[in-house]
Length: 146
Length: 89
Image (tube, rainbow over all chains, first blue to last red; front, side):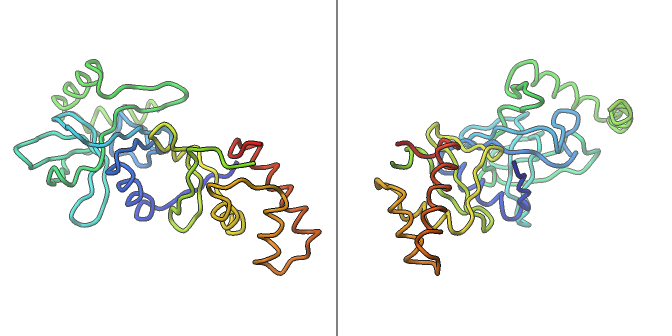
């Protein structure tokens, strides 16, 4: 079995097209910007078309600078969306609702699946948001443990 | 023999890959990659019945290969595709 690693700039436009055509997509996630909820290079995310999104959802967004990111919605005002990686300390991204291509519903990790849309996971995310002032230390400890 | 419904040949990043789309979803962790020759054969037999003879002819028509080698390769491809569950008798 061979593993293909396709660069984001080639794979993600196709992923966006597939999602906007109404199909779901499963793909391996890279990067640490969504720690501790999503472990890059280990987890896979199941994305569904973004038909109705709300604050707290983890979404795939196609930003104006042509980058794609998979971060959580921390603010939703009208059509303006503010995103932030769970593993980031301050950086946020802004985009329009129409830039959202898909929503993450499941995280697949080591043969288990975690439903990010469940009440439990949503509560955990809210608590994590409240811990933003000490997020730096929580992440340092988390990285140490893992 | 024919291709099983629900398998679609896509080009992702210059690579020909088969995705199973029967359930309205694509799993990028479970893809089958085709080299250019296999991709050409796939495109030619899409929606049609075929035998190893069909593939042999397609190969000898397009590539500079003798019939014996082409037939051997066709049988090999069919074996692989059956094993991967892409085609049915």
